[in-house]
Image (cartoon, rainbow, N blue to C red; front, side, top):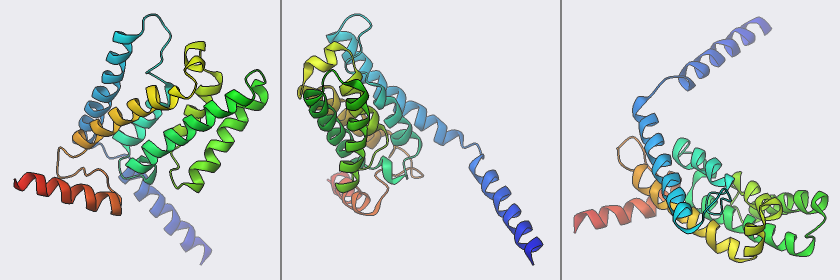
Length: 199
């Protein structure tokens, strides 16, 4: 009996690994194109408004969000509520923690990330790159720290909305990709899309 369970578990594992490693060139193409355009728009805005190596619009957490929003579009962490809400909650927490403990990095950094996680869980907006958004508000460059609560609006909100609108376009280009893909968002978005298409 235990040997049969082990063999069955082994067969299931092989099947899952096989399915997960299948190469779908269309999926890769749309993931590449969406992330390229989304991050490209942010980089363009960065190059117009800021000079030098100090990236304000290109915060690192946007790269991680792109992996989720363009590469794993079915994930609950990739959905619009999580993308927008997770970043905004985390940015607000990060700036607030920095205002209260600006010079104590060994308290401010873990406190910002931990509080961001808790608040994202409470608001049901858990988005893993949000932890980086909170951390960047605490450990970022002086330009980012000087923004204060404006950090929440620009670059975070503007950047997230650019990523979201790009995802809504590129993740719905084919019938095999639908975004948002979770029940509530999926139904509302695609009803609106159908109504607009009929007119």
